[in-house]
Amino acid sequence: MNRSRKLMIAACIVATLCAATAVAQDLETWEFKVTGTATKTVTYGEIIDAMRHSVHDAEMFLDVKGVEHKYEGIPFRQIVAMVDGDDNTHPYEFDIDLWVRGYEITITAIDGYSATFDTAGVDPNALLLAVRDNGEQMTPRLVGDLPRSSWVGNIVEINLGAGDAAAAVEHELILDVNGVETVFTIPALERSAFYVEGPGSYTTSAGTTITAIWGGIRFSDFLKAYFPLSATDTVTMVAIDGYEMSYSGAEVLDDSQGIWIIAFKQNGEYLPVDPGPYRTIKIGPGTPDIPGHSSVRMIGRVKVSGEAYREFTLRLSGLMDADLDRQTMQSGVSCHKKTVQFERKNTSGLYTGIPVWRLLAYSDDPRYAPHGQDKSIRSYNDAAAAGGYRVIIIAADGFSIDLDSRQLDKNDDIIVAMYREGEVLADDEWPLVLVWDKDAELIPDGIKPVKQIVEIQVVIE
Image 1 (cartoon, one colour):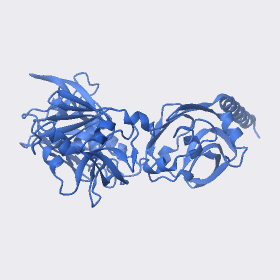
Image 2 (image 1 turned 120 degrees about the horizontal axis):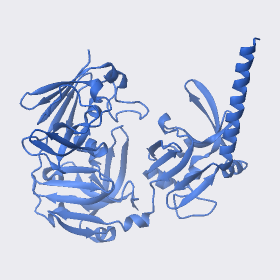
Image 3 (image 1 turned 60 degrees about the horizontal axis):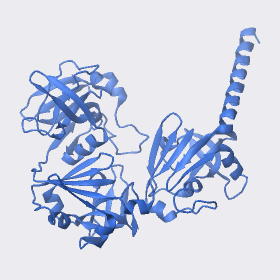
Image 4 (image 1 turned 180 degrees about the horizontal axis):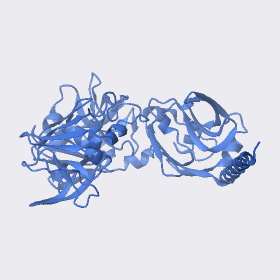
């Protein structure tokens, strides 16, 4: 063996030994927080000690890219049990009923990466908090029957949205009628003449359906007690995290497929703060099902005004076609909100909307649209955007502009706006307008403001 080959092997051995030493040192001090009804800190050493008892020791054989891995650790449900109820000392009792009803769990890694999943529909026995991979020690990692994007490693925090039911009961709901506010608590609403219970469901954009017996107040009757609700009025739900969804008075009043309620109970239990403490749902004898984005969670405020509700449709065409209605666009803006200071000639102002590149994901691939599949599958086609294709933005009067995907790719400063200065667009721009930030690092060639947008075409040759 020649001298350079020997030196290379020696260097590899040294690097491996150094890496192993660093991991060992990290594991000695590694810890993570678990937050729910309480906050607890768990150390790596405590997990290893727990695994010495058969009730805590578990293993899973899982396929990773065609290679079988043996993961060892403790059942994830035992970590959850520490903070999913009021039993704050060992042995903890896992609340299976709460898990089945569903709440969100967020896992965060040391580098800030996080993944969230809903417990409803997930087998709690199919998840493992692993600390060994094929016999090699590693920092804590969640593995099991979840999309690979949720197999978060180097865990530093596990947050349960189960929360404290008592805290949810105290959470207030604000009714804002043309600027006049009235505050309600759950006990007061439950004692009111508007309280009702019944079956209903909602289906997420990924196709998961959540069905339950919901308890809450009849929405339309409640509103009519404080406001002469008509079919043309606008009713807006504002969540405590800023998410907004608007309904027409006609939609709220329509009980042909079931009645809208503001729910605060699910299967007889008060909703936690997340995904409660209030959410919209439809109930009725036929167990009506509504789109997930229409079932607003974490509601803190209900705004009612005599502003006329107007529907619209944005057509997205290309390798896949989609028609986005007002509520879908509003959901997208709430989730991917971007506000820009637009200035051009005699027009200026703060516009809020969604970056154009995020909308392109509805049409840049013949198979995948946003939120329509496993989260590990990206809907936005990075390769196609980088390769370059035409993006044609069309107004109601036929005016259009032709942009290059490479100059829109991940460019959050170029947006399709739905609001100006916090209000729905005026008639000359409604329903949507193309604008950009005056300080944008990259302004696409040939861009012009497009008012009254009705269609975006993706042309990939």
